[in-house]
Amino acid sequence: MQKIVYSFHPKTLAFSGPVLLDESDISPLEPGVWVIPAGCLEAEPPAVEYGYFAKAVDGKWEIAKIPKAPFSVIAKRRTAFVLSLIINPLIKLHNWLLEERL
Image (cartoon, rainbow, N blue to C red; front, side):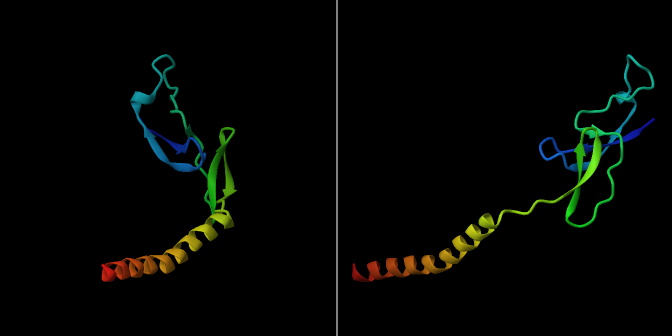
């Protein structure tokens, strides 16, 4: 005898995949009663559209929008990348000029 339950991430509560239970997951104290692992729900998560995810809330699945990274994080990464394109060649030139003088 087998049963499928659906796990979720402990921090984000996002659906993370199915878990297959077998006879060893049946309660020895209550025959016929499944012991559901922590972080799992018996209900199947709903189908979601692009940009959304299934989230476990109060023992049931809800659909939530995937949060976007704050603009400042994206802008900082782009700025750092652009600066590295400018600064790295300048550092190489500086080091080359120092070597030529020595």
